[in-house]
View 1 (tube, one colour):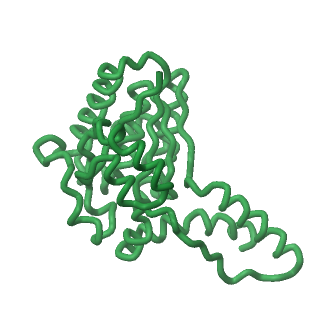
View 2: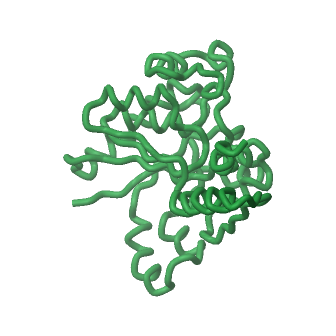
Length: 244
C-alpha cells in the first residue's frame, strides 16, 4: 500500500492547493480534493534567504525558531517527521523523499568544496553558521535527513543539492540513492541535443528560452531572487560549457 505525505511552508491543504492551481482536469480535482485534504502535511523548515521575497508573506506553516534554531535541530525534527510518517502509515517498504519546492539559490559551501565528503556534510550541519562559513540550503537538510532515515532522495530543483558529501552519505546507507538536477530533465536533454546539433552546423545559439505553465511558484520566486535565477540557469550553462 502506498502512502503520501510531506512538508509545506504554506498552510493550504493539498486538495485546496490542487484546486487553486487550476492545472489538472476539473473533474479529476473534484474527485481527489477531499481525499488529498486528509493527507497530513508537516510544517516546513524555512530559511528566507533561499526563497524569493515574493514568497515570504505566505510562508506561515513553518518550524518555529525554537523548534529549529539551527541546521542540527532542523535535521532532527525532519528525521522525526519521517519516522512518524512511516509509523502512522505502517510503511515497511522503501520510502523516497522528493524535493518539489521552488528552486533555491545555490549553496556557496558546495562551490567552495567544503561539502565533498559525508563527514564534511555532517560536521557542517552540526557547526554554527559562523563556524562553517555560510548557510546550508534547506534542500540539503531534507536530503540528509532522508538518507539518514534510510530513504532515497530525488532533487527536483536545479540548485546544487547533489554535492559530493550527500552522494557519499547515500552510498554508505545500503539500498538508498540520491539523484536529480531538475524535473525538466526531458526538456533539458532536448536542449542539449539541439544546441549540439546547431553548433556542429556552424551556427551559434544566443538564447535558450523556456516557458513555465505548470502553476508552480518558480517564476514568482525567480522574479525576486537573483541568486535563484543563477541556480535555475546552471543547467543551461552546463549545456554550453563544452563549447566555451
